[in-house]
Image (cartoon, rainbow, N blue to C red):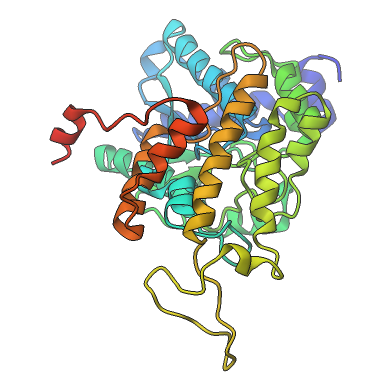
Length: 406
């Protein structure tokens, strides 16, 4: 697709960009409620953010009074290529906003350490997520984003969530958007958060409209949208939205997102990236495929305890067959070793400048605490495994942090 003019986009897609930007400005200046733009780094959220930036930048500086927060949710198990891209983009957004006197600040939120993927899977033994037990979405995506929004509501009374969602994505998405719409306004009520409203400026766009806009209009923060297009071509994927309620579908369908996702049978996006030259990601795909294999009904009992975490045993109906509980402690120790080995392998093969952290030091400390309290692991398997695989000591929590947390 070659670059053309905005007018050509309007003729082809039936979108009046000038009218849309006037509409965005009208909604922005209508009240004092700050905006929180959900930014995943994908095409739809990039399109929404770029449209809003363009519209608001046309206002006189004294009318750009209302804060705009660009919020990215990092689950700590995102595909490394995407993490690096988003980190670079958030830094570029903040630099450009300061340079252009825009009331925009970008930041990302992460799960609480006790809620992280590895603390729950390796620490507590939660089985890899499945369609029937998807314990990850709320902990990793919904709760961190909602905590940020609730804090802004506490400060300002109300906020407006700006989401890059489109009615054309699915019939379910269109129904949800219509259900909460406030008659006579451009806003919808948030389905679960009091004091939060939702504005969806690109809801009428289809996927061609999104790409046409991105490739015809340069990014105001200096990124090259052709790089974004190249990522999509490499992964043949969609994007994971900022998830702020249970009605918004998380990924789980081979889109950009968590490399550990086992809700799908195969991670087609990761496989495509590897096939297109990102071979350094192979250890992640191998580990992800192993986690998926632990869901195989014929093999579950190889990896999982017959007891629940509270010591109870649950049976299937009236049978004598127990329902598998958490991962066995021995297997969790094996998973920790394999995760750390994958981290070493990925960083050894990564392109220059790429630094991948698969598990945070804080997560290792929390796993260590859980294993000691729940498994009686006074032999300190976490520290021993870290030293064996990485050659480094697991550093204790800094003294000042310990003092301040009392």
